[in-house]
Length: 302
Image (cartoon, rainbow, N blue to C red; front, side):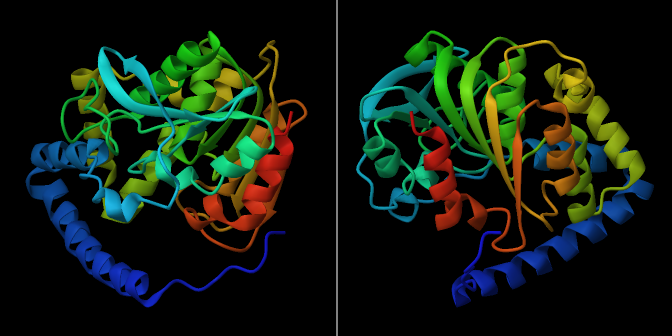
């Protein structure tokens, strides 16, 4: 078990109250919209699904770690903000949705001290990176997976020692692995295994009804050429014959955003994997919790 979770500061608790009020308004809109304006409700759902809000100012993203060596890497023709620290076997740090590389600041010095070269970046449309293939203010899991593939290719010829991924980036990392990117070891925090799980989370949070979900999925397929079946790991991993990386998963038992059942299923399908379940922290705080960092660094140590 991971222990010693600290309570949220007052500012964040107040922010959550404000966010809850906004969510109540959105749920009301989608309940009415599904009946009266179903097409518009679906289009608005897609906008929210693909939306990446502007990153906070650098002063708010900064965790006290100076930027590393800049790397010139493009993803589908678009430059990303990527950098590296240290020398040795390469470990990638892939952040989740609506996040940025600085979330790994607590990991990077410790991984460098362990004799590793650490590479972190902002995914397309996130942080200081340029917009990706879906244009300004929007992104999707293909962007995140393409970035993992591009970075692994640029720094390791497509084969690196390890990767740490959080939330949606775990789904993207698995997708990248299935398309040929190789990791010897992987640490997944708040594991995501299914695009359907992600849609279900948004539907519950924002009040999307079945018609809105169906129409929104159809719009995403038609507009962005996204094959949802590619993002369902259960059927894709069953009986697969490949060189499996060693995998450590760390997951909060009550995480509503990435259900524990997904991580448990992945543990069943992934030979030699290990799943650590905690009742402490939450979806985001679990990533930089000290026990998580300790376990990840030890697992990735060469």
